[in-house]
Length: 299
Image (cartoon, rainbow, N blue to C red; front, side):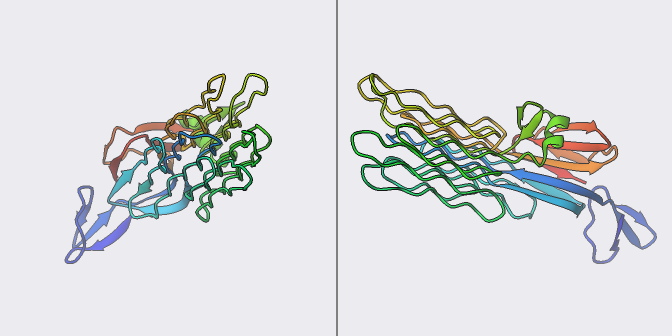
């Protein structure tokens, strides 16, 4: 517990007056903050969107009241929204993928570059310490371009290839034990990932020469589709909710995965109060509070 001056200190609801000093409850916590993934752009040769930025803070001494913001996934042609725990630096929303013949947007992880006719369009850059860049689009005349994959927290997005979208970058598995304890993140064979990039679009879909979208990165990244031409389009998919996954490149807009905020502290702990209906889980010697929507906590 920390001691705050009786005359000058701030009195919190959980403070205890002893003599002329307030003993303010304090806990040491680890905090995972994942922003919303980028939204899928409705266009041809579209790049996959980048994952939301992922930040982790360890051994934080916290007391008092904290506001939690959980960023939403980007809707259509927009980046994801930021997430934040109290005054800690916010994780940045994922960058949207580039439409045909445009570069990917920057974000927590960068969106993949769009394909083009004769010009290579780069993926968007990532925010330092929060993710990775998007892959470059593939360019070739006669409808053969394709989009690059969006970046993920664990790897950069793959480059587009001949009529094949780049794969989304993998998310981070560094917090797999958190995912297993709270049943959050993207479970891949017993390993839990957060913040995977979206797959790029495979370009135009034709009867004689089909296109393939890139796979979504582990961590909730959406699969890339293919733009409509003579035989119609192939649908991509949205990023998974509360993973921060980027949306797949597509012929129609897709939404990025919303973010998540998790607080972990040792032992069995119950907060003084919370808002936003967080889930409390005690597992493996830790107590977890999980927010899938914005709220607050009072220590």
